Image 1 (cartoon, rainbow, N blue to C red):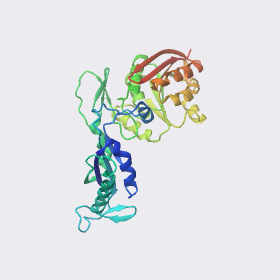
Image 2: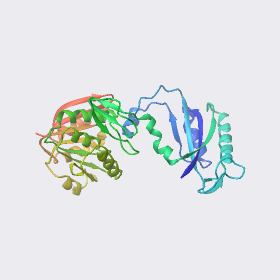
Image 3: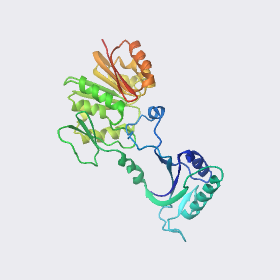
Image 4: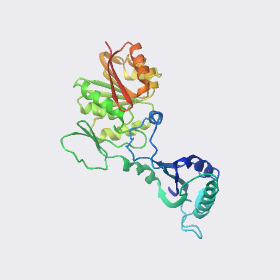
Length: 335
């Protein structure tokens, strides 16, 4: 499927009003590119691993709107671009451009929209899918080198984890994931049976196995995890029998709890938001063996006390609390 993109150069302060205004002429949804830093709340709600350090905010924003091209059509009559479909009706790119420029001129009358220039170009789905690759490159977490499939290994002498972020899950770049990885590095042994709750891309379970764990089970609510885990197991030579994935809610679904098993795991890792950890913790203690280690992360610093309290109330002993950036990891033991 092909699309025509209308890309507007404006100011960050004008983003919302331009998006709202162009919605009224049928341009729904916008891709926003700016350098505004994420707030702590936004990071917590996103809970993704790809959070690259960006340049300083310069107040400039790029808004891209995508309009589907009429399938099988060549250039529209009198147009340099294919015929487009907007609101179920055929329309030329030039006609949309004229509408957009007219709306921007009206906005200029009462607010600063910066340049307000509009560029038109053709694009495809694959451009959207791969666009984020420019932000993700190989990086090291202590002695582990995380390498995406499109890059060559540049550093020798490190354990190599091959992983692609895809569109749904993370990579290990996020502070919360790194806190978990460092904890796993210290606690995993050759006898370790690991349970990874909210496994996503499977990165924690895969690394635990690479660190020497005997077996791993991952759970996730999102069926997208099936393909993500399959691809990452294959990329890292992990056998299916060593890492099993279960889709479902271990907090509320008794069948999932039964399938996962009770008092079976030496380590339970959960890199999930604090609100979920408070519900998960009293349930997951039944999956842990006596003496088992509970590694939690995904905790923004102002939620530390909430998670520590939930861990203690579940009868676990808090062994340590670790920090990285704005994030916290609580490690506990079932005695």
